Image 1 (cartoon, rainbow, N blue to C red):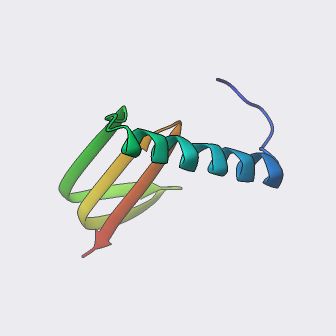
Image 2 (image 1 turned 135 degrees about the horizontal axis):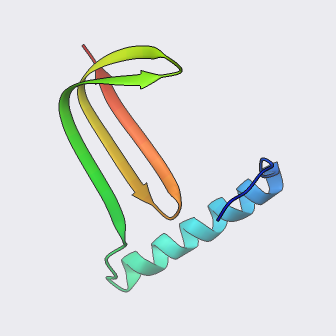
Amino acid sequence: KERKEKPSSKEIQDEDIFISAKQRYEKAHKIIPISTRIHAKDVVLIYKKMPFPLENLDIVAQDDRVKIDGNYK
């Protein structure tokens, strides 16, 4: 889904509520969520042309959202 404008605060809040309810339902009914998980060690993440050397990098894509977590060297 392609979107030009940023979602409003209300739209973000509504989506957060929906995704939380969906994830609770999946957990309660033992449904394995569809997600992509990437774990990497000793990588350099480039963000806005700035390099960030990281010891560990975890990326999770689920429910049209991406979560990134990393540890600096």
